Length: 336
Image 1 (tube, rainbow, N blue to C red):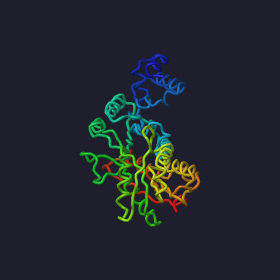
Image 2 (cartoon, one colour):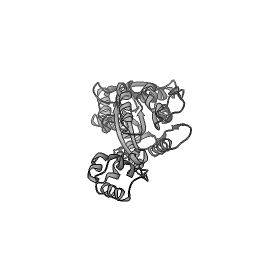
Image 3 (cartoon, one colour):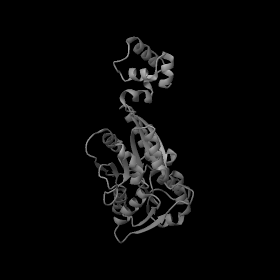
Image 4 (cartoon, rainbow, N blue to C red):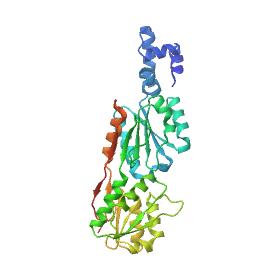
C-alpha cells in the first residue's frame, strides 16, 4: 500500500498522511486516529518506505557482490558471510539485499538505487578486483555509509580519498601460512591451483611462492575453461586434467576449500590416497571441511570477526578505518 492509497481510504489528503506519520502537530485528533488505525490495519508502518516518511532512514543495506559471485553456490565462504550478515543486521533493525553488479554497471546501479532511495547503506564485496573510485562517486557525494571487503593490497592503498572503511582479508598471508606449514611437514614437490583472473588468488599464489625456499618446486594446475575454479567442480576438474602432475607432487594448495574437496574426490577415484599419497590444503574453513573424509586442513578467516567489524564500521560515526583480518592455520587430517 502507498501513502496515496492510505489517504484515499482515510478520506484525507496525502500530505495529511505524511504529517501524521511524521508526528506533526497540525492534524486533528480525529484524522490522526483514523490514519493510524488504517495504517496499523494494513501493516503500513512495517513498510520500509512508510518508515522513511517518519525517520528519513530506510535502514536497508545493499550488499554489492561482483559478478564473480553470481550464484551463492559458487562461493560457499561468501554465502556464509552474507547469511550471517543478514541475520545479525536484521537484529539491529536493518534489511539486507544482495546486489550483483558487473564492473561496467556498478556506477549506474548505485546511482539508480541511491537516487530512488532503495537503500541507504552499502557493503561492497570484491576479492577478484576493486571497485573503481569513479563508480562510487554517488556514495561520496551523498555521504552514504559504506564498507568495502577487499583482498589486502601490498601498499594498503585503495582510493585517493582517505575516508573509506575497508576490511582487508590477507590472502597473501594465507598463501604464506600454507607454504610454511607444508614445508615444515617435509613437502618439497608442490602443486598450486591458479586462477589468474582473481585478485585474491594472485595474492594467495604470491604469498605461497614467496614463502618457499629454493629447494622446493611448484607446479601450477588449473581447471578447464567454462568451470569456475573456486567450486567443487573446479577442483575436481583441476585434479582430473592434471593427474600426472599430482602423481609427481606430495602436496597441493587449492584455490579454496570447495576446490580442495573436489580435488580429494577426483584423486581418490584415481587411486591416490589423501594424505598418504598426496596432501591437500584449502583456504577459508567452510563447514564442509569437517564433513568430508579426510577432514580438510585449511587456512581460516574468522567469519564472525569479519561480520563484527563490518557491522561496526557501517553503523559507527567518526573517522574511517582499515582493518586487516589475519588468517590462521586449522590442522585436521588431509596433510601428511
